[in-house]
Amino acid sequence: MYLIAGLGNPEKKYDNTRHNIGFEAVNFFADKHNIALNKNKFKAVYGEGRIGDERVIVAMPQTYMNLSGDSVAEIAAFYKIPNQNIIIIHDDISLTPGRVRIRAKGSAGGHNGLKSIIARLGGDNFPRIKIGVGAPQHADYDLADFVLGRFTTDESKILKPVIENVCDSIECMINNGIDRAMNKYNN
Image 1: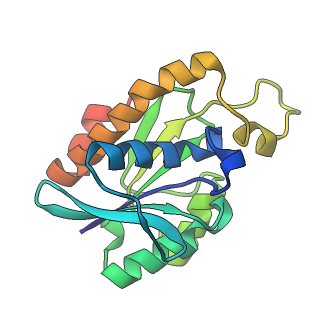
Image 2: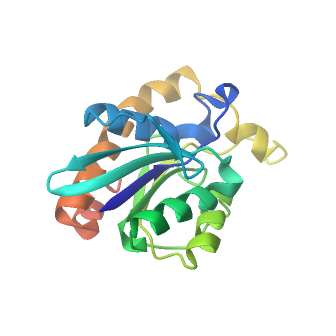
C-alpha cells in the first residue's frame, strides 16, 4: 500500500498559491485515477484507489503546512504504511517553475511541511517529489508572502504539463520503483 500526500494549506484563500502546488498535483492525480477525495479523517481529506496492483491512499493534510506530519503520521500508522511507501509532493523554492526533483529521502531543506513529516515519522527516509515554484526576485522580499502568492500567468502555463508529468512519475514509482522514476522524470 502507498500513501500519496500533497502538501498545502486548506483554506480557499490559499488555492492556486505556490505553497499549494502539492494539493493541485494530488487533485489532478486523483481525478486521473477516479479516486474520490471524499473522506475526512486523520486531519486530512483523502480517498482510496488502486494503481495497477497496488492499493493507494491519496491525501491532502488539512493541518496547514507546518503541521503536515500530524496527518501523514496518523494515516501511515493506521494503514501500516512503511516510510518508503509514503510519497510526499511539495513546493520547492530552490527550483525554477517547471523543474521537478524526485528524491528517495533527504533533509527538509528549510521546508516546514517536510520538517513536520520528518519529525513525526522519525526519519527522512520517504520519497518526495519537489515541484519548482521559483524564488523571490529580491533578497528583501518576504519568503512567506512569496510562497503564499499566486503564480504569474506565464508560470501557470508552464505548470500544467509539469503536474501531468508528476502524476506519471508517481505511477512509475509505484509500478517500477523510485530509481526508474528519478532517471525518467528528474529534469
